[in-house]
Length: 137
Image (cartoon, rainbow, N blue to C red; front, side, top):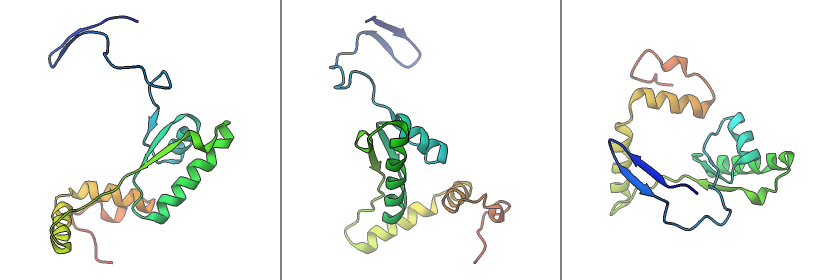
C-alpha cells in the first residue's frame, strides 16, 4: 500500500483511504453500455449492469439476453446483478405528477430527443435532423 499525496486545484488529499476493503477484495466492475458489444462485454466481465429500458417487456428481454450470454464466457448468470432505471414522478395527485412529467419533457433539447428516438427505434432518425419539430405521423 502507498500513501496518497495529492494537491490540486479542487482538492487536497494525504493518506490512505480510511474504509474497509470490499468483500471481493477489488473494485466492483460496473457497466452501462447497452449496445451489442456492450452487452457482450458485460456478460464477460461485469458484476453490475445499469439498464434503462422503457417497458417491462423490454427489460425482461434485456435481462434474458444478457444473462443468456454469460455461459459462453464461463460465467454463471448469478454472478451479475442488473440495476433497472426507473423514472418516478411524484405529486399530490395523478394530475400534478403528469404536469411535472410534461414540464420535464418540454425541457428536453431537440437533439437529445432525436438521439433517444434513434436509439430506441434502432435508426438514425434522418427524418428529424433538419428541424426542431418532429413531423406528424
